[in-house]
Image (cartoon, rainbow, N blue to C red; front, side, top):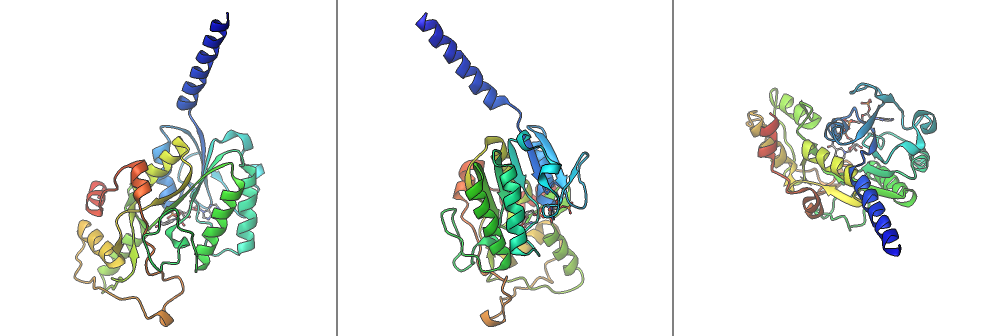
Amino acid sequence: MLVNVKFFFIILLYIKGTCTIYKRKNVLIIGSSGYLGSSVVMYLASHANVTVSHYTQAAFPNSVKFDFFSDHVENTFQKKFFDVVIIAAKIEFDIQQNSLTEAMKRFINFFQDAHMIYISSDGIFDGVRGMYTEMDVPEPITTYGENLAICEEIIKSRSSAWSIVRPSYIYGYSLGILDARLDRMQKKLMVGVENPFVDMFKSPVEVNYAARAIADSALREIEGIIHLAGCKMSVYEFYKRSMQVLGISVSNLLPGHMPAMQLREVDMLKDTSLDNTKMQDLFGPCPVIEEFLKEFY
Ligand SMILES: NC(=O)c1ccc[n+]([C@@H]2O[C@H](COP(=O)([O-])OP(=O)(O)OC[C@H]3O[C@@H](n4cnc5c(N)ncnc54)[C@H](OP(=O)(O)O)[C@@H]3O)[C@@H](O)[C@H]2O)c1
């Protein structure tokens, strides 16, 4: 009899485990109409039940209009419904810090039981030494960086489960549309000389790789901080290699230098390159610019 009861519980645990693995998750994406968010939706859609939200312009059918700052989260979404909530909306620019704090707290408190994924940025670091790891403590020096830090702290302290994803420059084709940075540069080079800095460093990451990694983090509910980054390179090298792959002449692309410290705008960070060891362990090697841009060009 005792053996039968034990056997029954083992079967029950097995079924529970199997259901956990195969249950389709309900995922909410705030910022689904954006450059990054729209690709995340595409990678998640075949594996999860995805609810999407936009602010000004819907990118998908049935998208819910939601302003992070003025709409009431409780009147827009169902609290218990979502297993994972992804914030891929641009909410850290041009906003008073108390409004951001209030809106973020309200949002996180409402979805307390969900696994929260927040898309932060390399801009949270001061840019003094570069190759920051997930263990490094950010010391933001720009308003944008301080706002990212506010959001990260609220998520860490109030969510039951969370991931914070910090991408460097994101580039490439998201649903066939080239990122605004490279698009701007190719247009500018057709009419004049441009001087991106050889002494400013980033770790650009391709948008489809980034979106796949975020979708994977949602499906596997990976916890903790993750840097999303390709190889470290100067901003000049980034533009030069990208333009060459896109078939744009680089004769108008000349190496520039960052202005002297006292003339520098406060948001010009010298080296916010990121260490990507953890990312590559989790999601596999990150291919180089030439492979990725060619694939989607
Ligand atoms: N792109 C990069 O190189 C990069 C690098 C590092 C980190 N990031 C971070 O990644 C996130 C997404 O960037 P992205 O390049 O995809 O930006 P994006 O293309 O400008 O998209 C921004 C998204 O945020 C939504 N949004 C804006 N204001 C909102 C509000 N008040 N309430 C709700 N939604 C709002 C927009 O909705 P509508 O389109 O409907 O107005 C859009 O879906 C940002 O947080 C950014 O800081 C980006």
